[in-house]
Length: 152
Image 1 (cartoon, helix red, strand yellow):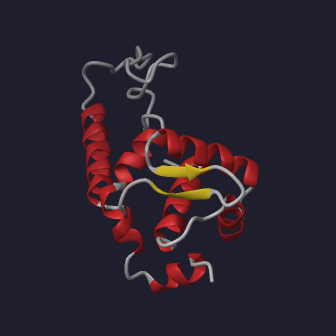
Image 2 (image 1 turned 135 degrees about the horizontal axis):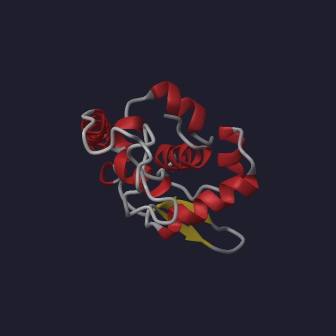
């Protein structure tokens, strides 16, 4: 399992905004702090705003802020919006055309192998832990992170 760059940037953007709660932040500041491309970051910011995580302000003094309190943003919610269904093996995962329908398996053990159940339980436990973690938990009291993300 590997976190996509888009999800990583989404979480870093949210943490940056949470670390700078009393101001409007700019995309260039986030890009500099996270060593990211502004163009790639623009796509992530757009998706975060569409999903209701960020509020964007247009214009000369524009930028972005969190649309919700950090305690109201769960890491699991962000992951579900940015990651496709995680498939540990070829026996589980989304259909290639839709993320909702299970796909047909070419595995000769399909329907009788218990590994799929174990993998699904592991995935449920993974998301359960992410759901329990909020953006506030990642940022509040994390002084080394705040030092890196706060803009003077």
